[in-house]
Amino acid sequence: MLSFSTNRFVQLQKPGGSVAILYYLCPTFFRMNFKEVFSVSLILFSVIDIIGSVPFIILIKKREGRIYAEKATLISAVLMVGFLYLGQSILNLFGLDVASFAVAGAIVIFIVAMEMILGITLIKDDPDAKGTGSVVPLAFPLIAGAGTLTTILSLRAVYEETNVLIGILVNLIFVYLVLRSSSWLERVIGKSGFAVLRRVFGVILLAIAVKIFKGNVLPI
Image: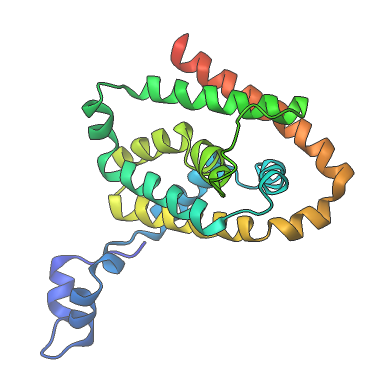
């Protein structure tokens, strides 16, 4: 844990002292708690589950010809960071609650799961709008979905905002690397492996959608 008390900082602060200069230039670094950053990063990694989404990433690539990793990562970043600071206010502005938002995300995940299991296309892309699959359903709801965004709201109530923000950025870097490696992953998995994984993870996505729906529509 990296922590500096006021007294300790005063002792370190000397005329022209490098620590004092560093503090004013980069105060975020001094507010970091590496234990919290690690915890937040691990929680978000489990919720986003970008590794488990690899079959779907390859499906999007086959359908559109390529994955727009930069676009998907940037939009995911805007959604996740925006929700960190404005999430509850945005929902209140539209008269929505977290449960309604989660159910909407669950319906989209359900549709995606049915595509993967049945090998059909339900989400029609505009042929004139390239890269739409990198936005919906990849950036939302696969990466920055209802589960991820509601988790961010929960994490904000427990951890410092700075540490949550850094945890989000760590996960976005990993997401970007996985998206950029989609061609390599496709070669490694192969056509037969992809067909099997697509249906297996389709069932998993379907179960996740049902769980989210049950948890927010039929709470125990």
